[in-house]
Length: 493
Ligand SMILES: [Cu+2]
Image (cartoon, rainbow, N blue to C red; front, side, top):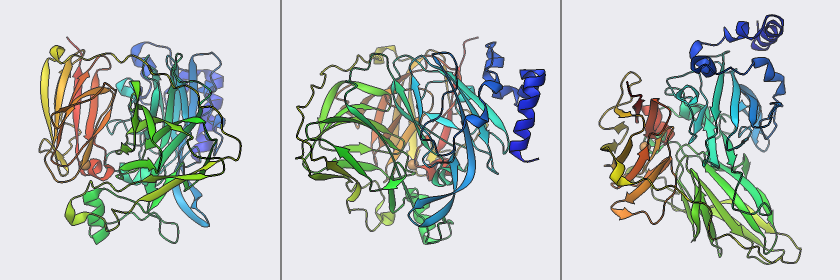
């Protein structure tokens, strides 16, 4: 039977004889509600038929307010990623990038996920605070044809921009390259920024696609393969929301709120608009306490930023958002064109007369202070090329163990000559200093770029969610090569 036929049959069964027949199709670990005594969402409440192929948002089919029930499918599709060329892609709900998941703080979320690929996958909810069963780490694969419920409640104070992507053991690069990535937007009930700011979501990615539409995924035996192995795979095609150099509209005087996600495998973006500054208002874990005016934005892999773009141009004019050169490389494998700025999108000012700019609040939200005096441990994490603390990833090994509730200081050292962006699953942290220079202000982060031969220190509190959490370099090739470890947060006896 084909998967769809199986599913239809199961749905009929579910209606006829109740939910538990269907639950039997899931492994027990795949039904988090069952383990914790909560009532699992009945699968019939989230029909896979609610997936509308190509829909830019996941469709919430929950009847009651405060609940979000969505269906998500990973499948092989044929799509035109570049004009006139068809590619065999992997897509979430039939689109690349995948549909955006829109949430509010406090929402009880259930994602019914089906893997229609011919290989195992997972869905990792990057940056979200959620139970370990729903993290979608390599420890929790969803086999071909199988389903999994990802369930979590959106924590207060976590409003921000996040993303989701596969995290299967050793195959993350290839699955994200083929098209599996999408954004998550969490809104706060008391968002300090005016609703009148036009909001835009920019999901950045890059790729290399051959003339016949095939993804240029290299073998390590080739010269390009060696480059990809060392640098992480970079592409010459720069996509914004799946489009190459799209045009966005703005009006003179208008303020727009942009949420930007770097979902590229290894490209670090250094964003700038010539002649304009940005008001940087947030990063991985949401808004700052105050806006910060900046000339450019450095966004390493998996990082997010929120910025206010002020329409300072004249009616009818245009401006270009570029990514400027950023030298994250070792000299031996630095790409030839690394020092060339690249255009990402055109900002076109409408002909309408300027509007008077609205006021931007000077206070955004308070961010709780994690006090280093409360830290019960200081840990060293050493990133060398391909390894963390001199070891390759081992699914059966715990690298760091910490009790639930502990506050810790982590010192992350990069001892080699290229940058490595460090990501910790499950917990947002606050940077203390970078290379000994104190952070100028508090912010929540889940990913931090550690430049060549530099160190960062952050403070983190394992407030909830015991379990085995990944810590790794977010250059996808490095992660697949084993530049990853496991933090186990243990419950007190
Ligand atoms: Cu790395």
